[in-house]
Image (cartoon, rainbow, N blue to C red):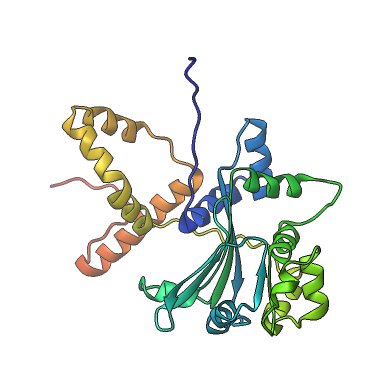
Amino acid sequence: IEQKYGTTLYLTGKGTRLFEKALLEQNITWHDFFQKARQYRGHLTRLDIAINDKWGLLDMNDLVKAVQEKRFWSKSKSYAVHGNVDDGWTVNFGKSPFVIRAYDKRKEQASKGFDTDVQNRVELELHQDKAEYVIDEWFDQHNNKTLTEITFDILYTYLWFTDNPIEEKLLKADRVRDTIESSVEPMPAWLLLTALGHKMKFVRQPKEQSIERIEKWVLESVVPSLAVLKKTGHWAEVIEAMNNAELSSEQQKLVKATMINAITQANQKLTINFEKPKKRYQEI
């Protein structure tokens, strides 16, 4: 019956990059952040981990063909193929609470008008207990594994591609994974990806804020809520809150840099002298 209060933090890909900037300013790593969240009884409802293939190790056409020809083994019997050659393929293995997804990241971004140096991406989408399991493993001081090692251990355990079709009798063996590995050659590209996996790094890519990015976010995400407040008579409180808001040092630097840039541009276009007068004078 008692009302419980809490906060939900939902981060998109771009949001994660901006949030990392805030963490960096406080000298906090993701590991530190999750530990702090646990101290306040926080828990994960979803965790996405992306493995970026920037070298073109995988060929999505080959991966789709392998699925169609039953040249793969997955712990989950559920899988689905979406897309096409022109727009890019997406292959899903499993369903909530755990999905492994491989797709053509470059074509996916191109369809949105963006460019990227990532050619393909393999994602682990984990919900509830599966997401908490990854963090538990990361915090476990006994195994002392990095997040990258944990990620590839999971990938290796749940999914494997082969060079030849897998016979039905092998899929029914007691130790399916071991039997397949000992009798069917692996797909070279998938073997290479998983082998190189433990040499990959967990990368943070904090993005600097800009006035343009803030404005775009406000226009897309905040303006509708502000319109509600304005139409219901709460606009004065919003203005007062903005006037009294305390800016961080980074935000103050951003404001100062923007003002200096505006003054410089205005000075160039209008030939107005914005410099402080060096001497006092009186009108005659």
